[in-house]
Structure formats: structure tokens, C-alpha cells
Image (cartoon, rainbow, N blue to C red):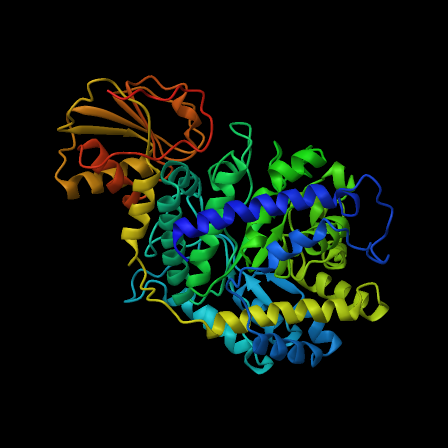
Length: 552
């Protein structure tokens, strides 16, 4: 589908979905009257549900075929209760051997390795150790008849578990700037970047990526999402999210949009339980818009957030809420893809749900996969006991297993794109070029013939590389100050933000540029702008308190 056609279609789908949510408000999770329990019969659909359901099901999207779904159901039905318990959990990796044992002996759905991977740069293939372990995971589950899930957090920017030799991509806020500044052309650039990243990850042995971020940043007070969000406007974020999902799907990767219903809060869920204070109307018109768009375009997965949403289910984390997941995401938004909880080892849930309780509650609420429990064995034992007792309905669990298996089969059968590590610098640079935003400039615009880069060490190093490649003298001339993540500002001839751009407001410089990335590809795009060889026509996706610059 062309970018322009997708943009028009997405605008219609977002409108239909949000209108339907408002119309259907009397019978769904944000209704004024809601007394049913998780086990109660679902309310009969209202007339307002019809257009919503149709909108969600129209796109073919990327997903399992009918044959793959049938095969997955058969495989799920064949699981023993012990195997079924493991198939509902993505393990936290404490060691390679223990992870392999969980897959081999307890049938865990997959393993999530966090922290910066150690790459052996002395070999011909620096990713050799990563690929080898991922192959071992698949070998450990070779008898199950379908792949093991091997996921990774690789959003770009600050959240990138694998760095060199893979291509470095800018933060997802760059996607918002590109879409805001260039519309359909910006969406196409975002799709190409996600496709490129997905291709390299898949070549390294991953089949699932926990990205893109569907949250709408609240601005400078945002403690954890920040530049991981595409911006502060719901429609911009929605367009960026759908464009990225399309790219990952084209690469044959299962993607998961996060953190439903929106980590649009001023507290970090790694430490406590944040409160999403939106009332029902704001949820409909603001927080849910990117997720509704993702559902409408048949996104493979959605990750739930550890958020208290008083307008829906006060005091219960969204990731543990039947009202949020089953009645909201499933029944009302019509989502039939994978629902994955956020990490269950986070502060928002660990203290409230000890032992394996968090895993059980997430599954009962409607999650297909419980991610990274604090203790894998405790979680497994608790889920197995809940299945035996009926606390987790067995057929619900088998439906969840079938969904997971179907997507894994589909990812396995999808064509593999060229994914040589570091081979997609052009796509990364194109995204940064489309995102780069002039926030302030003098008139006339001065000619830059030499530069003195200072500030964020990582950005300065990358800039030096890009400047030397382009023949831009370094060491004398225009002072270029780079603001790193969290920087409060700087002063010089040119100030460049490399993460969220809020520090530009307090910076003293005639020229201010928002770049949203600090790798070499982003710096190559910046050098072209400084040399006058390219124009920075991205648009700020957030408000930084600086008036738009006037044309000279």
C-alpha cells in the first residue's frame, strides 16, 4: 500500500474507531455502569459496535493464514497441562544454561535477554555469540513443532539492546518529526527504517521486537518515555506507530506496540504504580488513539503497561485488569493479536503481587504471554497450579497458546530480507534527514566552513566521523554544542539536541536544531544541513516553548 493511500485510510480508521468508542461507551470498559466480574457473561453489543468491529477487521495486514491458525490450534490442543503452563511465559534470562533448561524442560514460550549484549569483536562475525545462543534456544524447543519466541527491546535511540555492528537508528521521536514534517513521505521513511532494523534483528536470530512505542509523551515531566514516544499529538503518534509496524511486518518480525492504554504519566512504572489520570473522554480522544490505529491496521501484538487507570479499574494495574485487557482491548477494540504484559519484575507490580501471583493475574486478565517474571520457577509453578485448579480457565490458556504459536509459525514462513549487520545506514540516515528540525536560525543563514564540536561525548565522536567523511574541517570555526539525554541546555553558535529537544528552550544560540539521534547516520544528516546541502524540514512533534522560526 502506498504511503499516501495508507495515510488517508488511517485517518478514516482512526475516526471510525474513536467515534465507535464513544458510541459504545454504555457497554464497554469505560462505561459509567460496570459491575460485571471477569467471569460474567459479556454484555450484548450495541448498534454502535458494528462500525468499530468492521473497521478493525477490514485490513488484511500481516498475520497468520487460516492454515497457520488451524495448525496452531491443533498444536495448542496437544500441549500437556505442564507444557501449557510454560507456553504462557517469556522467561527472564539469568544465565544461558538456565534459560535453555526452561525452554527444554518446562516449555517456556521464549526467553528475554536484557542488558547490553556482549559482542565478540575478535571474530569475523561480531554477532556470533548472539546468533549462537538464539540458535541454541531454537534447538532447545525443536521438538515442539513451532519456533521458540526470541524477543528483543530495540526501539532505537536510548532503548537498543544491540549496538554495533548493527545499524544505529535514532529515537522514535524522529519518526514523529518526520511524519509531522513530511506527511505520507515521512511515513514511508519510518516504514523503511523499521523494515531495515527488523531485517537485521531477524538475521541475528530474533523473531519478535517489543516496539514501537504507542505512548503519547506528556513533555519535559515525562520520567521514562521521553524520546521513545513519537510525540505529544495523538494522530502524529498513531501515524508513526502504524508506519513502524508495517516496516517490522515486512521484515517478518512480530512487533508489539506498547504500553497500552498509554504510559502518559509523570511516574516511572519501574519504580512504582503510575496513575493515568485521564477521564473516559480523554482516554477515547487522546491516549487510546495510537493503539486504536494499530488495531485497525492489524498490528501483531500489543504490550500492556503497569498503570493505574482510575476511570477504568481503580487501583488495579492495567496489565492485571480484565476490564482493560479482555473487555477493553479484546472485546471493544476488536484486537485478536498477541497481548503481552510488560515485565513482571518491575516495581509497579512486584510489591503488590508476590511470588508467582503477578504472572497468574496477568494471564487471568487476558494476557497471552506474561513477560519476565521476577522468579521464573515460582511463576511457572503458580501458573500450573492455577490451570489445575481452574483459576486460569484451560480453554482460555489454549487460545492464548494458539495465538502465540500462529504468529511464530507465520514469522517463520515469512520471506527473510537481507539483514547483514550495519547494511542499512542509508535508511537510518534518511529517517534522521526527514526528522531534523530547525528550531531557530539567524537571517541571513551563515555559511559554515569549519566546526568545533563540544558537549555530549558520544554525539561529538559520531559528529567528528561524519564531518571528516564529508570534508567539513573540525577544530576551528562554528561552535556546535551537542545536548545529550536530559541536558538542560547549552550555549554556542549552534546547539543541537540529540534526544528529546526540550533543552533547546533554555539554550543560548542563534541556531538551534533538533536531531533526535546521536549515531553516525544521524550526524551525517546533520552535516549536510550545516553545509547547506540539505534542508531540515522535520517538524517538532512536541512543544519546546520556542516560537517557530521565520523564513529569511
